[in-house]
Length: 114
Image (tube, rainbow, N blue to C red; front, side, top):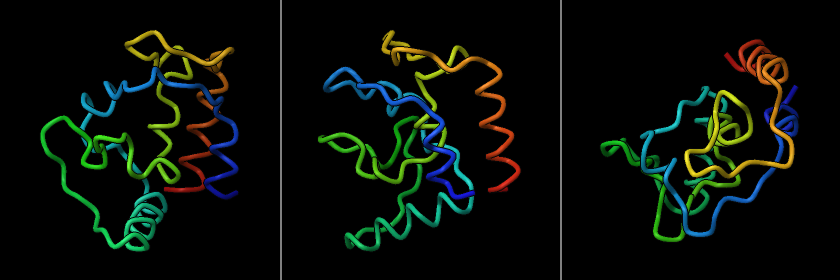
């Protein structure tokens, strides 16, 4: 299983344009070694380096939004898509993940990427 296979299990949804509340509230997103390596490679290809935490704002948040969006970690993808990770602004996909689906995603994540 690849990270992208796991990410495909998470529903997509559109955030409110200009909203970055979750990026400002939770600091550096948790990530596995595989995700950290993807982020590092993505940044290096663009002449940038991984950044340290700065308070509660994600270091990858820019004026334009998430600067690592294509390689953002699982927790960023999961936010807003399940009952346990509801968006504080009320944005959600057409269908939220059921708790069992969320648990299976975390099980696969831990089994394959820790």
